[in-house]
Length: 275
Image (cartoon, rainbow, N blue to C red; front, side, top):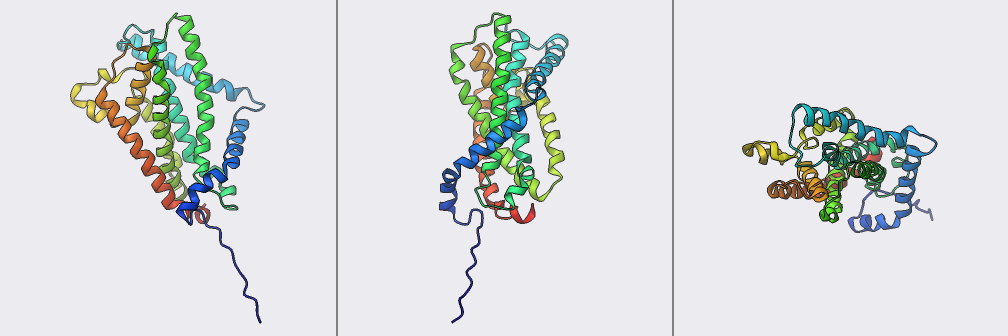
């Protein structure tokens, strides 16, 4: 009798119930990829660490001059460098997380085409390095508070909630663009444009309170508006927070996360073939 040759096909996400269980099964791969990205960024290099400090610091100086000295936007009795840096921190975290997650699949194409694992691990690990950059930059904020003798508000306990909101927005948006980037490589040129444009249409150097009332709803459709305003409100206790804008940001962040996961899972099966 002839023996029939058995062929085992490993397909990403073939069964929904096994896919999410695999996230725990492949947790060591998650840690490995995260550690690898950290080493690539920081090991045996000075500019990697300095860049995490210099980039937000230089941007803070420019925004302080433009919005604080020239445009004279209000800072609610908060030293303007601190005021701006409080906007820079969540924005920089979002921008770095989104950029890294968007290009992560292309950067790891050699792994994706060879072995099976839940592909969602790759863009998620990209956020880890951005989170480390966030904590490094937070040291600058601490230094500014000491220099200006500024005492944070007791509401600082709410800062992690707005950081989670920024994470949700960045990973959701990142999953969508990462999926599109596999099939349409032109998206790698669109991501820097989105990040640069987003910096200027987000309340980094000012608060959304300076936006005319009739445009605030439209302005709040940028999910980072509520995050940045909320982050600044929680840290200082002096700025106002737009409840409607925050609610819109929360809804959009949750929607982006859910839709990002859905779209990523829908297109994930074809990654190995296309990439």
